[in-house]
Amino acid sequence: MAQESAKITNIVLYGLDSRNHDYKGLSDVIMIASINSKDNKVKLISIARDTYVDVPGHGKTKINHAYNYGGAELAIQTLNENFDLNITDYVTTNFDSLAEVIDAVGGVDIEVSEAERKQINAYLLAGEPLRETGMVHLNGPQAVSYARIRKIDSDDMRTQRQRNVLEQVFKNAKTLSPLQYPALVRQLAPLVETSLSNEEILQLVSVGLTSGLTLEQGAFPNEYIESTGQTIKGPGWVYVYDIEQAAEMIHDFIYKDIPFSQYGMTEAEREAANAQQTVSEENTEELP
View 1 (cartoon, rainbow, N blue to C red):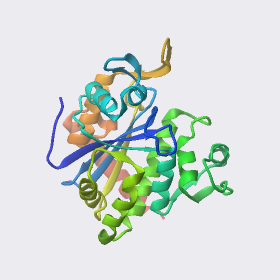
View 2 (view 1 turned 60 degrees about the horizontal axis):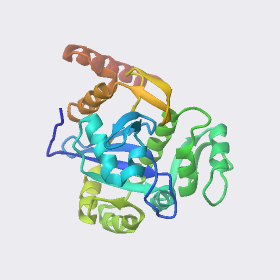
View 3 (view 1 turned 180 degrees about the vertical axis):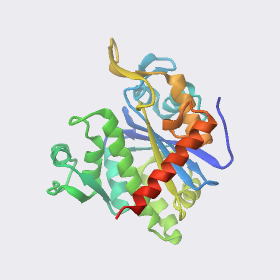
View 4 (view 1 turned 120 degrees about the vertical axis):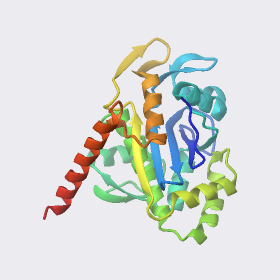
């Protein structure tokens, strides 16, 4: 099933549960970033850290264990073999480094509830606690703490918060002049571990931050694939869902531009769904 396109570059983003620029540990964030230079789109796909998969050489366990067992090499191999991908490049950061990255682009504006504010302050890495709710400006440590929240709802919401933060980082970076990109890349390079050179990162940044860019999101599991939470001896609580179906949905989303909500539809059904969505959006725009 693995497909390739000269116009599409896929990399995987890892966030580790470690600090002090130590790039070892469990990958609490696993996110595929697909950059389409032809259609001017960036697609972010989160894979829940508790997803039950086969880790080469270690048997069935949580997907986030792969990074701890064998670093980025095994983590990427696990992702590729389970989801039929051919990703070769990655960017890894940890709690402290991610906070510095967010601060480097000026922080992020996020809608925060009172329950989230309390959780942000309870697990804040450093600095001033958050005192406001609603649309608030979060600095690096506050944004990292926000992205780690899961006790008040679910791991699904946790991955959504992670994508919320990354989306705002993208938006902030887009306000920069292209002449500022090289300096930004040099500033951020020491804060991550990556297979990409500064020149390759700059090329991707130049594509990803062009005007008219659209950012689309998805996650696994989701409402369009049957999933269960199970407690299994060894890894403990895990997400169990059809990995082959998930792989098909990822490929359709990246290479055919078919959203998860339209997986399994015929072309005619997709056209009808798109037409209905267009009508709904036009009606919404006409409301006073």
